[in-house]
Length: 243
Image (cartoon, rainbow, N blue to C red; front, top):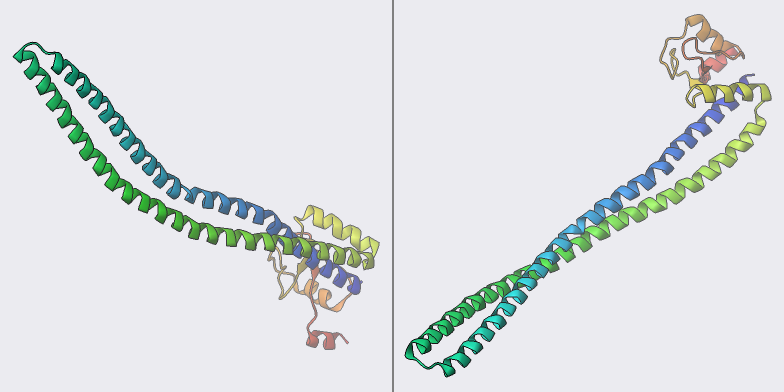
């Protein structure tokens, strides 16, 4: 029976590793998704700087259109100027033409300001693109590493499942039924490893008599508190005493 108990303990170790691997396999895709979202959110530094450049370009285009409209008005005033019949009309058109020409000068100054800004914004775009490239490369490397880890854990899980299946074939049927029932009803923990004189799972102290029997007999004992099978690995001196 003791040999069967050791097999159950090995089986529990397989199940523990499988649980840990399952958790890793389920968590890695979530981590990758989070990294991808975080990486893509960093692209805002590029899009925002490009938006500023587009706004600058639109502002210059608007000013240039305004100048064209003003030049058209000036052209019409000049036509009317040539057709004026009185000095008052003539001076009036002259005044309007000068007024519109001054407005053109003001707008041209604004265009120059926007052109100077565009140089700054374009430099900002280049810097943001370079910055995002560095950030993106770092994220992509981390994502690639996680993809490789995911593949590794999936392969590891397959190997563990195959090994566990082989081990299960060596466990007596009656013990296997007890083990499977406990695994189902005790949150995946059927075996409690006893290192000192406490249950390794619920940490309740084992009665001295029960502990002595656990060491000296081949019987299977259940923790009186958590209901799991107690397993104590005999140390070399304990084995000698038993002999």
